[in-house]
Image (cartoon, rainbow, N blue to C red):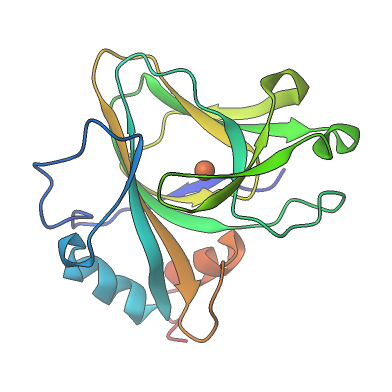
Length: 191
Ligand SMILES: [Fe+2]
């Protein structure tokens, strides 16, 4: 099974202002001036950049998330693409993330959709998905968003996921999980 996540031990916060996390929109863009410079510097040391940044809010008891893969333009009949995000979750261990398998014959019965911030995703009905891994994530971790996934917040507290879509400095577009893993986990990697 492909790796779905990797915890990171980072000693800085994702945002300059962690006090005003949104509680109305499910998804909202993070203004550039609220991204912690320590994070930008850390990624730059490993030849990575932030493509775009968003906050996903899940109210207490949220369980209506859609199973989806992030992005668009992938081969439905091939292997799932790898698309790596760097996430920071605020929440307790009652908030879980799951990844799913979808049989090939059902993948064509799906559709692209668009979030409130114009990012694309490809949605799958729960009835055709089989859960393959469930974990309570947080705070810092790499996240595989190219494999069908969703979250549930079973707790009585809000849950936020501060999510950075990454790219390589030398190449626009999505970067794979294994490429980010290699760059961040190899002390000697400098591009
Ligand atoms: Fe996603």
